[in-house]
Image (cartoon, rainbow, N blue to C red; front, side):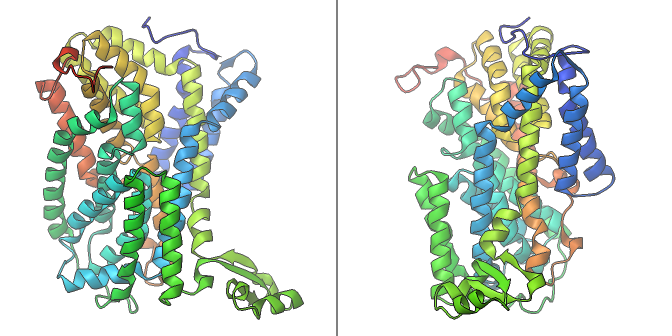
Length: 505
């Protein structure tokens, strides 16, 4: 038994590993639904996780109430709430910029500087990496770039699957390297290392992987490109005015880098985009928020006549009432994903409280990690296994961090090295697995595109199970650390860095 293990709070028929039944059932469900049947439906994944939690209950020894309480405990975890808030704010921001013609502006710019379909995925990777590093959220980047840059690339003739992979790769880069990223902070704090030193020490790994990824997107982009689409309003002509929203994005980046909370940073960008839309006549107020109310109502007719409030009240037939606009669409589109994430974190909580994670960690600690090389390899394998079961990369980091710390200390491995192995793999794999939170965030934004553009068909929506081979930066980042663990490249022991800055390591 390792020093990580305590008596589990939940007991299962079949032992500690039986606590993994809910998550294991969900993974099988996701593979069958998305991979084998090709059904990219987030609500369907919700049903799979619900079924897994119900089946897991049948294995519980003792009161089922304890099992239910653990589920509620998991669903109230702060790590899930953090991801949800990022999705909601990023969704509203991306939709509002989209309403202001930012996609038209990107198409115009690409045509003006002669960026063809072959080069577009590589540039998308670089720009997504820049944004994710600046704002510190790969999920927000995946949402924004899928809503804004993805349709522009499709119009130019870039391969949709490759382009989506490039967006996810950029998100991986930022999640791994950004000083304000939650994964960077968690990896540093849990391994007793300072954030600045951790970021500085991982640049060499991230840049090597990024160079190979950029080259791969250049090669694949040219070989997989097709002819531009003739889609009428959004064509290779485009409109330059939409590029004014680069100011909105810049405000988000600068505010986040300045140390402001991501909610504050995105809120200022959202306010700026709304002011630009109305001030420059890029979009009507009703395009951002519209109350579609019954036209036969006297109150509605009076409100409609008002100069400001009337701009967001749209009289419609009684059967067509609704709330609409970019703010509404940006938030509501993520509701199924929010429910799914809450349920998955609950399933992870069941596995933690039931001793499933400890059982896996005990096996790796006592049977596999017998040398420094094998210890670091099992760190990589362990993070991969946990990320396969927990879709939110921050939650996966929190779950596996004690194992990484215990194993690293056993072999006197420096805290920087431990934090880098932990963060790189959780950042990468969270955007590669078809049920990963980062991938599903971008996919959810993509599902809304057929409603935004008449030319965007359902056939252009990328199946989550098809994109995993094209998240090049994610794969290269994992490969870099496998090679580093095997060869010892960059390996440091505790005495290798002794300074006031790293006194805790």
